Length: 555
Image (cartoon, rainbow, N blue to C red):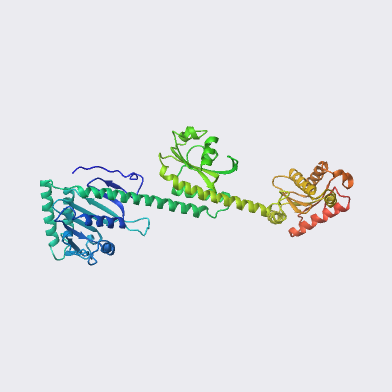
């Protein structure tokens, strides 16, 4: 019989399904129980189609007993201690009768294996299967299977099985006699060369399709599990830093990479601006500052088409501004995944690996699904950031609001007590602001508030905190600043506001729009932030009473 090799497309990519398949022989690890039962069912159904004198030896382990009884329509449930004979062409009813003709000892290893040996005038076959040790804690039973239709291979299988059971039968020698007869018949087959390949060729095609479906299912299951891991890692993560760390770690543990980059983008029509970037570089080149820069037009095409793209050393020239980086970093396989939420891209995931073909066409649907999860998570992060901003920022002036001011003043006050450092507070109030509002309207008044807020920020350090305290009042927290420094800052604020040309200020009392300020510091007799705020208020009140457009300190 001729042999034609059939190579499964996923043979080299699946670590748990090593398949060697040809027109006469199949050996595989990773058979599901259902696939194994279906195999036995097909062989037994076709056994008598082309041969009028087919005999079969069968052993069924307890783990398959119930399932095979139902699927093969056996007249009784087989027991694992028996070997059975079966003649498919002698049936007179719809039920199949198995005849026990050998008993295995109570601890015989064959009790846990499936064995099927079939011999007729023109066909022969052997199937053996044993459970595979499963390390992934899956509830599904996996089997190692060996199947053959070639006479000499079936003969070798019979001899091995005969040797296995020769010392493990308690009583009848019928099974050994059956095996002897089977050997004689197979030797006769070899002499006459009268084997028919008709049904044996059918089975490998069936197994090929069966295993292909199983591998497809396993691949889908792998991606489902990976997507679940990604969802668990980032689904409820609302902090940007934690979000980036979580997704890079889960990707490293599951898919694997040597370089990862996540960009959060803001769309501007069909163009995109980068608002945030995270890198993880596990190569020996470039460190944390290295960035794989895409050609803008190529990036926008990927983002607008919403489809992931594979990249390798040959195509790097088309996609990257710095294509030689892949060679320098020893990267040979990459994938670019647009992060799509509600039909628009809000980010881009770049992953590169040193192994060639690490990312393949089969990864694209799964990575597209992961991209959607990340995109949704990015939207959650953006919304959370916006809500947090709304909770701490004054909507009109874009300064911190009073709630944030109270929290921050408490933190700085406790820190100044802990380290025995200075803390100064400035309270500010726009002079005659009600007069300006009443005469020129609230919109003009809002413009004044926004302008004063901007001027305040130009007068302080980055470590200082400027807040809108309420109405036309502002507060400035100066950490690590004594009273003298506070007075200098307050005077600078006063002079800058006085010098600014406000519209209609010539109609204000005094002909200018000005500001009054009160300064207080946390001396040893200040026990609470309320006392510090009260002292700054008292100083501000004195400034108002003594002529406005001036700064006073608490005495």
